[in-house]
Image (cartoon, rainbow, N blue to C red; front, side, top):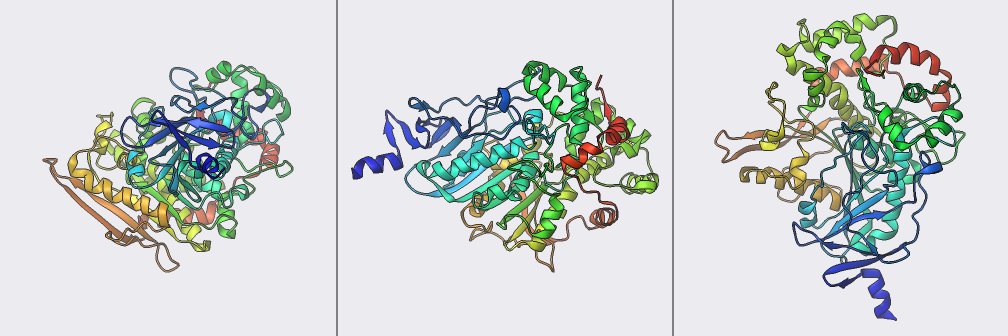
Length: 558
C-alpha cells in the first residue's frame, strides 16, 4: 500500500517517458529535445469553451478516460492574424517543464500576450530556468473577443481570459506537487498585455493564496490600454462588421455566441486605434453578476490596498515605443500624429476644454516644436514608449509600494547587446532595447558568448526572486525595493563592444527613473485622470462614447 501511494504521488517512468497522476487522471510527458528535463505539453486545465461557453468563465476539466499523452505543443488559442483566424476555441491547456518530480521546487507560471489579442506562436524554451531549479508552467488563456468580450450580461460577463488564468492557477495548486513543484511557492510572470493580466490577477479576490510573487514586464494594469473604457461601444463596432444593428447587449451576446468562428475571425481584421486601446480588453464588471474578478479601477484597488500583498517586480526596456514602429513606417502614423495629435492622447486622461492646450504642451515636450516625421522618429518612439508602458510601469510600482506589506521593485533594462539582431526595420537605427528584447535573455535564444554574463545575471535574479522573493543572489549587487523615501530601481546598462568579444555591463540601483518626464505625467494624471467605469455604467454611456470617442480614433473599419 505504501509503495502504491508513493508512486501515485511522485509519478512513474515507463520507457523514459514519465507519468504523473493528476486530479483528472494520469498524464504522460517526454524528455525535452534541448536538455535533461521533462516536458508535458497541452494538459487541459479547464473544460470546453466553445458553444454556449464561448464567453463565459471556464469550467473544471473533464476526467481523462485513458492515459493522457501530454505531447501536443501546437495548441494555441483562437486569435486573428494576417492569414485569418488561427488557433482553436478549446485551447485551455498548460505545459509543464521540470527536471524531476520528486523534490518540491519553486514554480514560475508564464503568460504571453500582445494587446490581449495575439500570443507568440513560437515554441519557447524554458531550459535555463529549469536548470536553475525552477518548475515552469506556460499557460494558454483566451484572447481577443473570446477572452475579453465584456457586455455585462450572463452570456458575456467579461474577463474570461483572466478567469482562465485563475482556473489554471487552481489546477496548479492541486496538481503541481506531482510534477516536482511547490504549490505554495508560485510566481506569476507575464510580458506586455500579459503583464497587465498579472497585475489584474493580483487584484482578484479569487486568486488569493494562488500566487505568491508577481513579475510584470513591459505592461501594467495602470496602462491606459489595460482596462476597457467603452467595451460595449467597441463590441458594437465589431457587430456592424457582422451586419448586426440591434441595441440590446443580451441580443448582441447571443448573436456572437452563435456566429461561426471563422466569420468572427474575418470581422476582427482591420482595426487600428490611434490612442492605443485594444478592441477587446479586461473590464470592470457588472457587480450584479456572479464571480466578478475586477470590481474597481486598478488605481483605486492599489490605493486602497485591496489586492494581494506579495513580492512584486515591475519592469520595462528603454525603447518600448518600438511597439509602434510598424505603424510609423507603413500605416502613416507620423503624418496622422502631426495632423491630429489629440487623436493619439491616452483614453484615461480627460482634458475637457483644455484638450488643445494640453495636447500642444505634450507635443512640444516630446517633439520640441518640430513636425512629427521620420526626422524625429526617436521622439515618436519615446512618446509611444512612455504612454504605452514606461509611465504606467513606474506609476504602478510606486502606487503598489505605497500600500503593500511586501517589497516592490522596479527594473529598467537598457543593455544594448545582440538581442536586437532580429530587428527588421532598417529604416530606424535602433539605439536601445526593443519591446520584448529582455525576453531574449530569459529564454534560450541565440546570444553571443560575450552576453552570457548578462544572461546569467538577469536569469539568476529572477530565479532567486521565484525561490525567496528577493532578486539579489549572494554574489550580486543589491536590488533595493521602493520605499516611501526612495523610488529605487535597478538599471541594467552597457553594450557589447564593436568587436563582439566582451560586454561592458553595469547593474546598479538608482532612484527616480526618467525624472523630467515623470514630473510632466504625474501632474497630468493628478489633474486629469479619468477612471474606467463598470460595464453596467458604460452601457448607459454607449451611444455618447461611440460617437464622440470611437468615431475620432478608428480607421480601416469598413
